[in-house]
Length: 115
Length: 114
Image 1: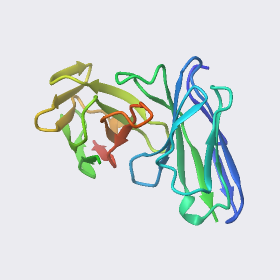
Image 2: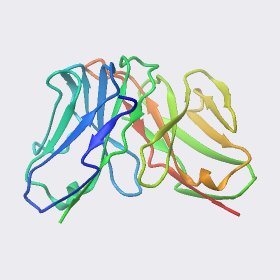
Image 3: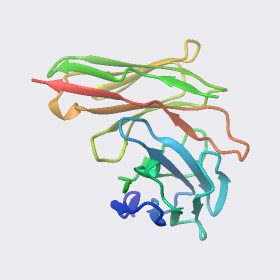
Image 4: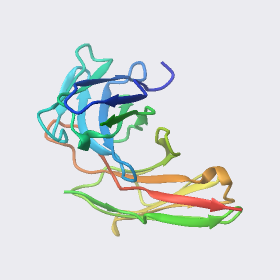
């Protein structure tokens, strides 16, 4: 596609509910990143994929967070048993090759509110 | 670890020039990005610096000094539509998985008034 596409754009979840957030990166982009952005803050790294391999998940805040990219294109970020502190914008980004000079392109984000 | 510092908020007048500073302390250095983010929208790429000096792109310029751990974004001929958050992000050493993951500052909210 022309840009990074994320869905849903907005999600309201009851505390304890599971949610799944989808990211469709730019076609042909090898690298995919997930970031979490709280209101008034910069994006915080969650996890990184190169093709289908999850090379870094050091930013996932707890074992309730899980991400996958089984076929090396679309990725899903799953949050189990949501808590109020999970309320944030979840940004997906992709880059062509994952090298040190690649530009990273962001999607518009999935806004999660846990009530 | 990595530490990136930028002012929380700045205000400027339409037509003026504004400079947004970013200082960083990182383990290694593999480039610095500036992104613009309007409220409720995706961050959009503005510039990338990996060597010292000034990169000019239209009304926007970005400067880097690696020895000082310092960058700035210069916006000229400010327009109302430039009101947004400006994010500084730094790539340090690759992670154990070999990936180059940018770390972001908290962003500078720029308010342009008439």
